[in-house]
Length: 324
Image 1 (tube, one colour):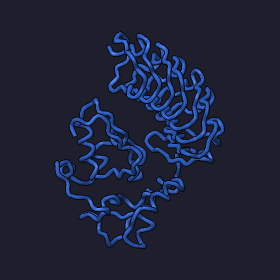
Image 2 (cartoon, one colour):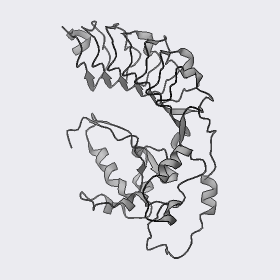
Image 3 (cartoon, rainbow, N blue to C red):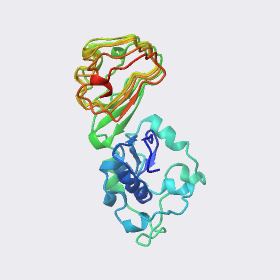
Image 4 (cartoon, one colour):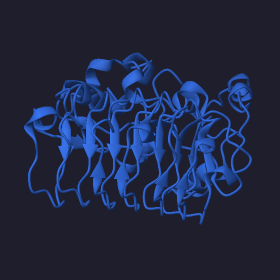
């Protein structure tokens, strides 16, 4: 797929072992302009929460010859290939939702319901019990507080000790009402709730946030500088709301933002300085709104890789500062 434009791979329980080397090699070879969803390791625990692009091949496959996994044609992987990792995969610090997902996966017999299958190798005799005591002791201790809002579920992202906070479809009406406040949230999914307003006070304690999903709510108003503390945010989803206009201070502080999704709103007006605070923006979706045109200079200074205006009410577009 050399001409792929966008590949969404996130939200899968990736097993970062030898078998993933071929995928890592392929992802590194595709065009830089392609937008690839994050491949975040779930297994083994030592790599849990890390992005595949930041994991070396030696970390993926520390005891085997890497070259044999880089061949173009890999043999078909059985279901068991998913479980080829160390026995110490389910630390006590895992949340109930993570354990529930793991326990729901198919197993071959009752003995495998409590631990995942490990692959025997020439170095280790499968008949001798292995001593993982010290490793397990280390892995079962949570290095950070796992404060999670009572209405949500959370998973620890080990790479930067941040939380993935899932609050989808929980009938939430105000972001500020989420308690207790999550410690160092990395990704927050607030999709499908009843949120009408985004306030300046909503994200004061979430400065390390990388992804914020507010899609399919009832948002009609975003306070000026509501995202002002989110200086590390890269992905912002505001699709499927009832926003009718965009202003400059709406996106103030989002200096590292790369992906902005505003489709399926009722946006009629965009001011010429709306995007002045998002200089690193690469993808902008404004499709399925009510736009008739854009002011001259709206996209000045941006180097967009993808821009979507489909299904609006456009009658003309200026070249200067927009299409130029």
